[in-house]
Amino acid sequence: MESRRSRAKAVGQRLLQAGTPGKNGLQAVSRGQVGRALRWFSTAVLNAAFLGMGVSAAVLGPTLPDLAKNVNRNISSLSEIFVGRALGYLCGSVVGGALFDCMNHFLLLGLSNLVTSAGLYVTPFCRTAGLLTAMMSVTGVSFGVLDTGGNVLILNLWGDKGAPHMQALHFSFALGAFLAPLLAKLAWGTTASTQNHTESGFDRSALNRSSEATSDSLFAVPEDVTLLWTYASIGTYVLVVSVFLFAPFFKQSSKQKKSMASAQEARKAKYHWALLCLLFLFFFFYVGAEVTYGSFIFSFATTHVGMEESEAAGLNSVFWGTFAACRGLAIFFATLLQPGTMIVLSSVGSLVSSFFLVLFDKSPLCLWIATSVYGASLAATFPSGISWIEQYTSLSGKSAAFILIGAALGLMATPALSGILQGHYPDLPIILYTCLGSAVFTTALFPVMYKLATLPLGGKQKKSIKSESQKFLPSSSGLKGK
Image 1: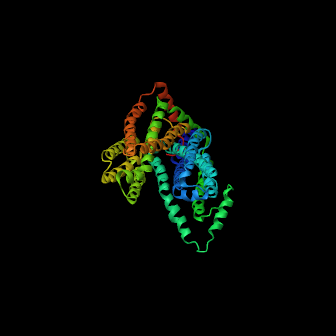
Image 2 (image 1 turned 90 degrees about the vertical axis):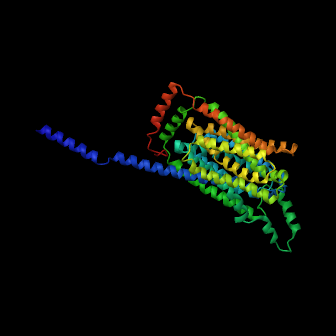
Image 3 (image 1 turned 90 degrees about the horizontal axis):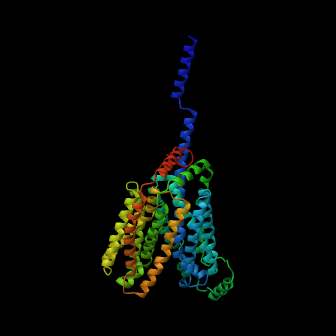
């Protein structure tokens, strides 16, 4: 009888425990909710950081005349600052890729944003071309670190669901580049407007003497206060974002980072480095064509097609406007379509539009229509390419740096070579030939990449990936929420 009572009591206790949520269950739910909230917070901060990078990178164009005046140089003789920034970006991509695999991600990105902020604050005070070039190189390094780390971190945060967030990240950069001229020339005004309101009794000889006196110094307060406020406002925004980037640094668990690293190490395609080399070439030609067309379409429209400057400026705006708008729309399309499908659609669109540009290179109507289609087709290619490669092989910091170096080299080499050839053959639409050739190459290259990516893995590698993914997926703590 006593044993029956004890057994009944034990059964009742088990039923009571089963009906009441345990402490461990509540803690797991709580950790999952915190992880999801932290993941969304981290994504929002990364988008804010890329918005700041877009503004910081694009503000150089509209403020270049003021910076040239600051260092007593002509705009045409100040091209080394672009080379300095591009070389800095390359170095930042390499260094950032190496550091991203061995230190906390958010700490690294926060520090890179601090460097960007410092460079923006100092830039208006530079009085020599050498110092200005050095500042551009420093900000270029921080851009390279943020670009490399931001792309990899989005994939780490969202995994297979990262395609829309990758599109949003690059849309934030495009939006920042769109806002930069408005901030520089509308919000804070222009140098011309301040010069028109000077008093008639202004002593210009005194200005010349002060300019000569400060030309030997490295730093001086700029004569144009609007230039100072423009860079200071952008620098302050970037500084605030860097503070928010440090916040997730204190929330990440070392256990999750180790499991993430082991899963990334195991999940590699059979031809991992061959895929990365092909994507290197893919981004080299894609980014090169994008920057070449955006840089030369104005001069091409005026000299080759015979457009007025106002029309050519509108054509240039149509290209970048459709590019930015479709990059925003790609956020929603990425929730419905696979990254590979978006790459195919983008490649076909760029191939068809560039073909019609070459075929009817003298037609203004075709130039307007094909330019808008070309800009729309290019918009989603870059973020879709990064999301696509992550489906088949893991992207570490070094891997991301490698493919971004290809994009940076294309950005530097293709416009320079196209400009030289266009100068030697002014009667030929070299710019359009460049875009068509790049479209043909990227369209033909993607099926090869897809074939390599989908080759079957060996038995040992399959088992390793399966076991590592099983260890990695159940983690309920940290940033990897459901």
